Length: 273
Image 1 (cartoon, helix red, strand yellow):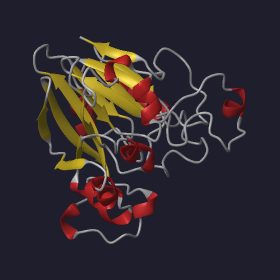
Image 2 (cartoon, one colour):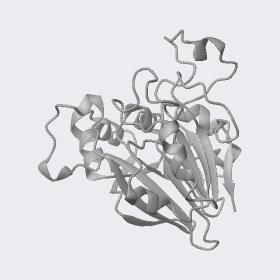
Image 3 (cartoon, helix red, strand yellow):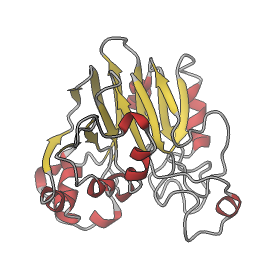
Image 4 (spheres, one colour):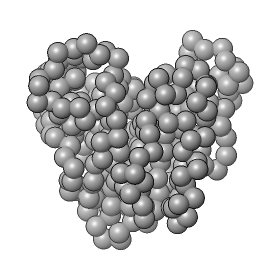
């Protein structure tokens, strides 16, 4: 299995265009918005989320470039972990696809059909296959996916929207992807409001875990808990229970000054095996 971080920043990127905080003012490199590419065989690739920077991210990643056919692409689909704009706006940038498969929970799908009608817009441009993201799923290339609901926070644009009663409350998900051949596994959880017993069991035994690095501390502007993110200072104490798992942090807010080997960068391959 291969896992490559395409974008490592939270919404707005880093530095953010309208921010003069110390981190943005001193930034020497650019972080694009949170998206990850995964493959079980190096041929069939899937995106975890599709941020607004997806075109640039794809073009600078050789494994994702089109070819050898005129409209042939290694991208097989997109797995959405939330309905947030920084995870979904990139779908519109993929409208040139001959066919596009998108996996999402009923809640995420309902928001993108009614509150922000991305689905009907996108369907006018491509052969859109909208699929439910269930608790377990098998993908091309030998990938097996497990999903865990970790949060119920609606995106701001859907805060008061009337959605179908059967759409549920599965708004924020963590994903565990396993290579059926090698057994290697990767957990994606860049939007994590709390470290629960269920999440602790979900990451147990994984080779690599990409955690929520939005905020370094709880008092960082504009407020970790209010935004639905567990600060890094509250995640780190849990890591010692999993000594054989490599934990890293992504989805960094532009105000987060964290550096180090456990902070991912754009373009970084974090699992190959």
